[in-house]
Length: 200
View 1 (tube, rainbow, N blue to C red):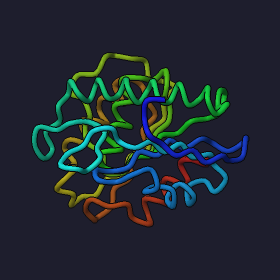
View 2 (view 1 turned 60 degrees about the vertical axis):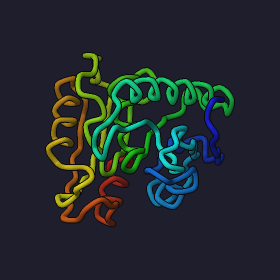
View 3 (view 1 turned 30 degrees about the horizontal axis):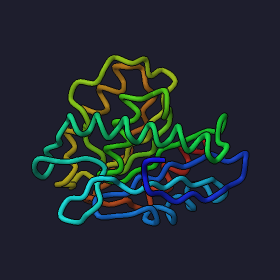
């Protein structure tokens, strides 16, 4: 197990939620959100392994909104290996796994869906951007993604999110898009929409 993390056992018939925090966050950040989405889910919450001036992140960036794409790919594989190990360690094989991410966590979650469909087939991502510009042409017809973004989000601009949606759809993923009028946040409407998507 390569990443520091928290695991909370859940009901065997509920999904396992892989919680991916935003910049400067930690394993506890999305627990409340997860409980709203699925009260009896098992929670697997790793900590981002990259430090940016002391703030935990999932991968390096060259500037605000400018990702180090080589590092994104390497860290995506690191996270994928962690998830596969955790499935063994905690007896989660055969259980439905859903990545839930906010901001930087949504971006690594998006990279997982594009690059490692062998590990993650479902993701609810809040305030995400295009994580990698030219992902391989994996068949994502078995992949479901929920994306919520704010129309006034300077940190995750809609054009980048639209490119991400296009790449997912070109690879036959099922994409549910939610928009809100706010900025870089998770709104109550977004939470309800994600909850409905998860239950569908």
